[in-house]
Amino acid sequence: MSNTAEGRDRPVRQVVVVGGGSAGWISACRLAAAARRGGSDVAVTLVESATVPTVGVGEGTWPTMRNTLAKIGISETQFVRGCDAAFKQGARFVGWADGTPGDGYYHPLNPPAGATDVDLAPYWQQTPGGVDFAEWVDFQASLCDAGLAPKAITMPEYAGQANYAYHLDAGKFAALLQEHATQTLGVEHVVGDIVRADMADNGDVAGVVLADGRTIDGDLFVDCSGFAALLIGGVYDVPFRSWADVMFADRAIAMQVPYDDPDDPVTCHTVATAQESGWIWDIGLWTRRGIGHVYSSAHQSDDDAEATLRRYIGPAAEKLSARTLRIDAGHRERFWQNNCVAVGLSAGFVEPLEASALMLIEASMDAIADRLPRTRSAIDTAARQFNAAFTHHWARIIEFLKLHYAITRRTDTAFWRDHADPGTWPDGLAERLALWRDHPPAAVDFDHAREVFGWPSYQYVLNGMNYPTTYARPAAAPETALAQRWLARNERMRADAMQRLPKHRDLLRAVRAHGMQAV
Image: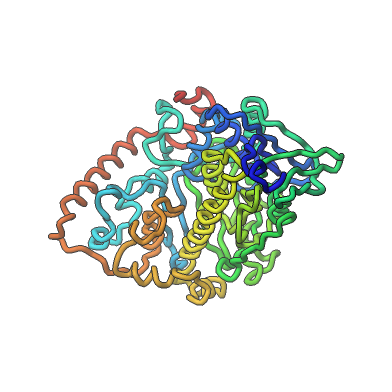
């Protein structure tokens, strides 16, 4: 391929996804479905190794996954049945604020009531009795406490009475996507180890060469090769921007824990419990729990960290093996180089707090598949836009994750004291926190109209951790009547949801037995 006018006008007809797993198969499905929907002749090929295992520990999603599944044509019933999936309504953080008994708060997926009309945070401050912020401004925390699902079996697929995402088995999810991609969407699946890339005169990847001598040519390459980063790192040597000085966790130990009884309740939110030098995630699936310990090896030994996890699980852990994952917190300085774009772990990774990994894959494919460049020249424009957007997204993600640690009042271990040191905070966080002492987080505080974490998420964390603020409104403020109407409506919605919605396991059982209403 040359850099002549003819070469730059060359149409993009063959997209090659390098690597499988969730990142590779989501990418392949989205690209193939978008091409089919748009009537394009773009073909998609996925190349993966038969010898390199996928990481496969990402089990939490965002509500965006509902849109992704709908776009690629997988029914919610098929997904729930095939992926051991359960519904997720947010996260509960235990022990993060000060570590005392009763320390815990919710970050629900519902926004605060009336979020587009009025900010309830100042009025919450005037409420006597220390009412939990998430409970006061929305009803989803009550559903989580009661173990209720976000929807009933009579509701259409991908619709609910409360906002929701999923917990899923990552291995089963990749298998479902692979089957759908190859059997329904026409994705070509090639198994083989890539040994090198053939390069065009203009620096593009022209094709990837396999160990058996086959060459897979393409016009656009999506690098989903995980930590190996075969193209973005191995071919283009795009530098890696480490955030290890901000996010200290560099290890994770994961276990799959069966239920004691098959009728045990299935928790409908992620539980993140603070530990001495990290935190433990605990998520409920249909047949098991996924539990893991994220920690800093600079603050705790690997043996002590595994012992911490086994104590949390209890006697059941004696028969379980553990899987260890290294975390190199950071991301590429550029994500799209020439005709290669990195998606998933090849682009970057940070501890799985707030489940951003799968969401970033989805966001990447929203930017690529829905606006797929039609010619080589358009790739350069797409690359500039993509790099600017995802550099911003990564900065905001890291800021938001650091917020969970930065405002802690825990001083019991060096891990928490070090996180609370402003010298370890990303640029701008101290300035924002100073502003938020007097003004609640609002849309004007953020640069992009569509932020990864919007102002409601910041409010849930700040107020959940009792960050000291002084923005209470007088009772005679003009918005007071509007705020009261929204609070009253929220109470009606709470009462209705508590009455109508089933227990979480009961809904999952009904989905497996009867299915949901097709859209």
